[in-house]
Image 1 (cartoon, helix red, strand yellow):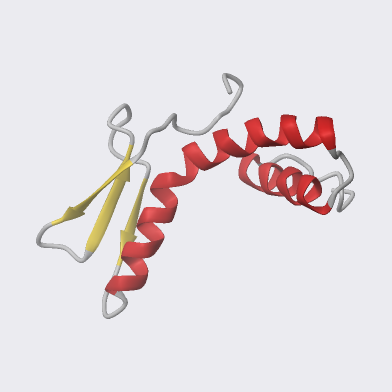
Image 2: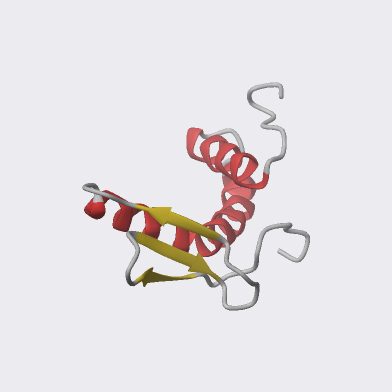
Length: 99
């Protein structure tokens, strides 16, 4: 995935003590990739933080799975969903939607 434009993974999350927020970054870029702020919705913010920090690895896994699925079953619904998710994550047009 050398042509990806996002901050390379892995990403890590740390709770910013004294503030109601999670700081997400790769350790390779400053200041950081993003901040998740929370108030009363701390469990939801924490769950979102885990999902966001997993994004680079999930995208890499989807790209790898897409190659395999496309070879064996290119028109199955799973292959189309995987391609759509990759398009959304990379900001490229989704061929299914005619973007």
